[in-house]
Length: 59
Image (cartoon, rainbow, N blue to C red; front, side, top):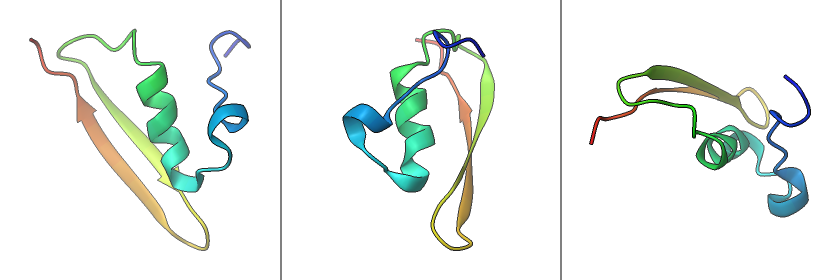
């Protein structure tokens, strides 16, 4: 991705560990259209990992 497409959250939110990917998605999901699906994967300290399946509802 280009620098404009990158979501940088460290300067405002510091290190949020595995929550960083959810925060970044919240800040930059304007191209996520109703009906589309996605997968957000995160990892945290140690061996923790998680995945969230998301689908944008049509309003």
